[in-house]
Length: 261
Image: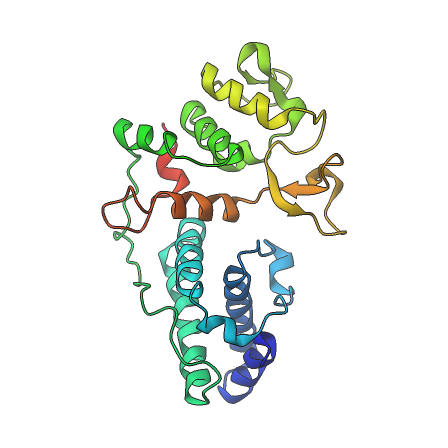
């Protein structure tokens, strides 16, 4: 059974209004992107995006619980506890229906706990916690992003929107020609960003792991590597997954907690 087919059969049996079916379909499609560890479309494109072609049985795989847990944490960080909880409830409804028909045999969301507004701290990480994050063994891209977020105190979306020419290496900051106040960082962050941009004169500073789809806007495409701009959702998901071992609650922290000021 293919995942998208199983979704449509569940929706057809659920007795939902057309509007509710649309909401359920969007949520279940979002979970399918998490299941295969791929970035889902964002904004208006998300509403009409088809699910990736994957077997429904992937929900029974050993990796499904951790992938869905990391995706749920990233969704909570991006859209808040209320929306993330609603999407979790939708997936669990579908899982109950699918399990009754023996299309899947387990519930990979069993270890995911619903969040409340106060369940996750919104306070910035302490200096000690932030230093622990920056000492983590992680790929260059994540190290550069985490250092830039912590040093500059700038908006994460603004940092992810940076292009290679926006850097002023000599001044260890964003280029003065950019609108708004420049973002400043320390020498270590400057070296990481320079390494990340090496060999790329133009294009997004922070790139995805895979080649970009053919319809990616030119402003979000690196012509040297063929990869696209890293999304906030994916950056948040990676950070939360990487910090689960540092968080006493075991849920991981959010990128916004790393930001100072």
